[in-house]
Image (cartoon, rainbow, N blue to C red; front, side, top):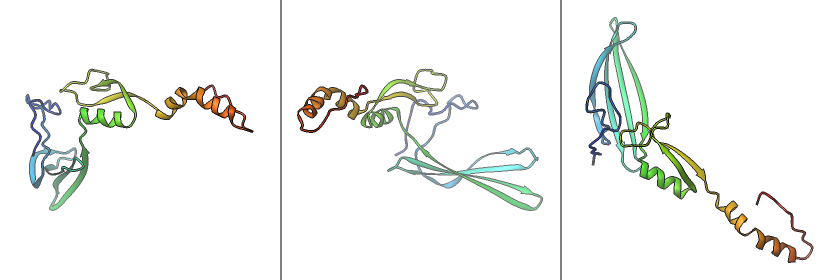
Amino acid sequence: MPLRRETPLFTNPHSQEGQFVKLETQDEEEQWPSFIDAVGHEVRVSKTRVYDHVPQILHWTTYRRWLDGVEEHTKVTRIALRYTFPQELAALLYYNGFEIIRPYGDWNLEPLTAASRSIIMVCRKDNFYIRAARENRDELLAALAKAPDVEPEKDDKL
């Protein structure tokens, strides 16, 4: 099922509607507008998109074709896009021990909104082991003091 949104994922300066990214498979080549390259060749552009729903990866292939005299050239570029939505990213960070300090929508530190082009998360790592060691430091030192032939070491970092 394709993603349907009221607001575009990316803004497009050539369109009032912006640019919507469909998360669906399109095996047949879709023609895009051609352009004239720096050498003067007319370059025809087409693309295919194959969306793998399980890992959430869109495999995007772009074909650029042009004639140089009578010889046709084709340049193929491939990109794999992994979409991560803000709620999913927040959950991944949380379950991996990070605390989100501030979310931003771009590198100029603008707020994260539906119109943001990027997701920038400033996080702090919550290290369970260090926190547990700090909380149980006195108990650990007392237990080591009672153990025979063991001299407890003092570590100011804990």
